Every structure is written in structure tokens, then in C-alpha cells.
Length: 192
Image (cartoon, rainbow, N blue to C red; front, side, top):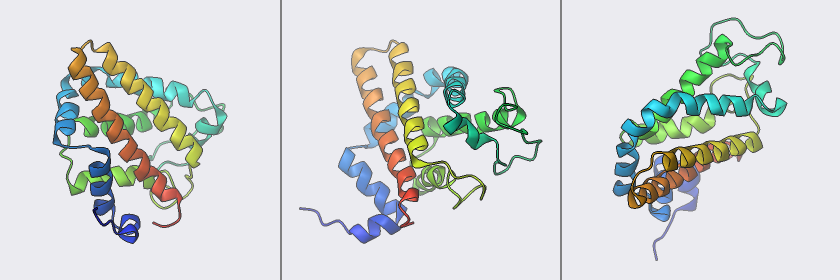
């Protein structure tokens, strides 16, 4: 039986990532499957990003988080929830972030810098990083991750790969998104 330092799991993101990936079986073959999907998924990223924002705009509980100042955005803010449209400069700015995130998932090496990046994705949606005015409730983050996961799985099925490659790619992304979800959730627990 392997000993796990539970205190270190809460304080050392690299150790946590190593534990999660080992426990879930997210290994080199999975990363290879994720990277192999890059040329197939890249042309579909704009549509996936648009679908995410259409979904976010369907609910006031998710749309409202785009009205306050976003970290790094220097443009004019919307005056109200109703004034915020999908073609607003702020949303274009945010869509760019999501597109770069999706690109990072399928192209970057899964090293310590990538682990820090995945961890920051969770942290930036809280007042602990990014904008102090931005605090997305955990339920909204979990809903978003569930939607992204389903959209990504549907997209992979739409690629019409051979069944073995489809299964391998979906399982790899599923493990990765569970790791990402944990690295989001940890910033809502008050221990980080």
C-alpha cells in the first residue's frame, strides 16, 4: 500500500497532480491521445467556444459574472446584464482566453508549468487571483465543466475516428477534465 501525505495533497499542487493522475490512470498514452487530437479539434475550437458562451448567456447566474471588470481587460465595461451581448468586446476577450485554454490542453507538455496553469484556471475564478471583483460560485464552475466535458465528448464522437481511437481519446479527456475540476474545486475549500 502506498502512503499518501494528505497534508501535502492540500498544499503542494505538483504532489496533488501526481497523485490524481496516478490514481485516475492519466498517463503518457492519454497525453499522447490528447495531443494527437489537436489537429482535428483545432478547427472546431471557435464553434466550441461559441457554444460555451451561448450556454453561459442562457442563465443570469452565469452571465452576471461577465459584467464586472475582468483581469486584463482594459475596454469599456457593459453597463448592465442586459447591455452585455455575445459580440461585446469583453466577451470577445473572454472567448480568446477559453480558446487559448483549449489549445493549451491539446498542445502543451504536461510538466510543472502546465500543472501551475491548470491550477491557476481554478484560482482565477475566485477573488484569490485575477479580478478581486470576480467570484464565480462553485456550482457555476461545476456546471460549466460538465457542459464543456459533454461538448468535448460530443465533438470527439463527431470526428468519426475509429472506435478504439475514439474511446482512447474520450477516456483521456475525461480523466484530464476530472483533474482540472479538482484543481478548480480546491480553491473553494479555503485550504489553499
